[in-house]
Image (cartoon, rainbow, N blue to C red; front, side, top):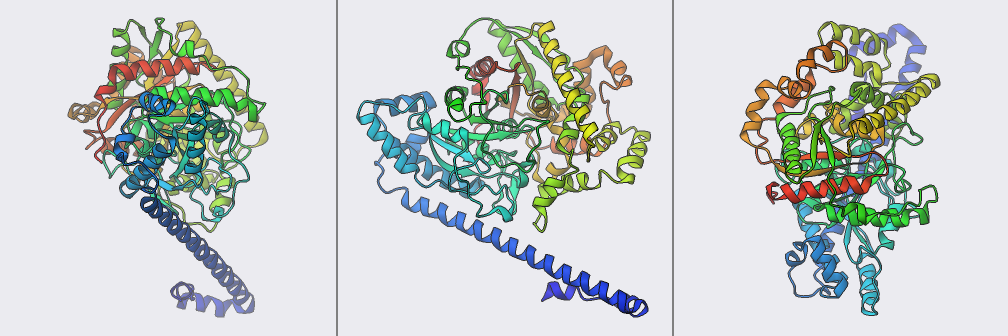
Length: 617
């Protein structure tokens, strides 16, 4: 009734109707009926979202009550606190039953959900699958490298008999007819998918909230985001609610939440494992490749998952090259030549993130590896093209899905930005005005996003191929085996700024654009010195990276200097109160060298893992 009253015409409108006569009245009635229709659709979708949320909560409460049945007396924490290698051994030797392990993790995940809001539901049949694995082991056989290991799954990864909503109410009830290739491969290796985890609406955000399931919080500071889009995974794994998680990554969606939550996350080259079986709000978009990837506390767990994904992907997807996993490369001890950088020229990493890179390099140098500075070529051009390719349809795909939906706050600024990018004012005049104010970065971004002609799209894709070759050449000419660089511009921010600071993902987005393997690994904890050093940011980080060449590179449009824009203001404000948050670095290699990338991550974790903080839960 109230919504209908709000549609009632004002006195001014009634005057206009009287003056306009019958045609004006007809137009008004038509628009009123359209508004009523839209209002009803929105209400139906809100009720649909509310119903799904209640179903999810009821299922989780049921697991809390029923998961105690049929398990041994061993307390759940005694199982969920076991390190991966020890857990694997106990499962393979029969010291622990897969049923009891999966049940313990179900109970732990349900308990953590009350604090983190990280789950969207549990997977039926997980305990039956565990029982089957126990019977197999009793007969002297093991299913595979992940025998009995509990696996959590991002909500947008397809599972037979489940819907993947991406936080969009109209997708509730659209059930998948088969498992994604990644889940099929995990099951082939003996892994047990047991729960599904939260995501941001549309997955196009580095926050983790949506109108159906709500917001997931950071395990270290609840007023900070867990990251996204695989944020439910990261929060759950961080607190011991899952051994291994499966996520997806198109701009940092695995690596950023992993960094924010102090765990490891890995994005392989898109051709190494299958990419089939994930709901995308950008169907048909091929300019930037999304990848499936594993997340875990330990790099060894990720390596085991990658070996399974590589081994079985080709069985279900013949477009994946049948290149076997090399444990010899992963376990090698040869000395590496490692390049590093702390600023890419797009936006400088903050002192805590730059310090993490220095600490990782110091640890690797102490292990006998050679460390050299590296200047990322044409980073600005790469990142502007990344934005251009992802918004080439002018946001049409996203807008259609969000029609009549409640748009989550973490997405609203992004949606509005893309919506107005094609206008004459925002696309033409505003960038010119911003440049006159010295805000070149924002001006360039506004001109890069928005609908493309076919000719413009093909040129952008051709330029991407050229830039891939330039980066490959830079790697080879420097003799670099692995790069170490920041995992994000800043540490976990507050949720309310996520929508307005998407460009801070530049350190991960560039490797989706280039399609290079990349993973994040935690190295330490933010301290008060990191907060104090923000007084000289971004100049301190830019000077460290580019030295005496800084001004020349700014003048040549190869580096953005200090911009005094809204994003820098957001970064500054969110770098206060960061003490105690985890710090992380990103490791990168050329395509097909996933084993080498993970080897470097493992060595860093071995050296610095003791410095990573414990979550507050």
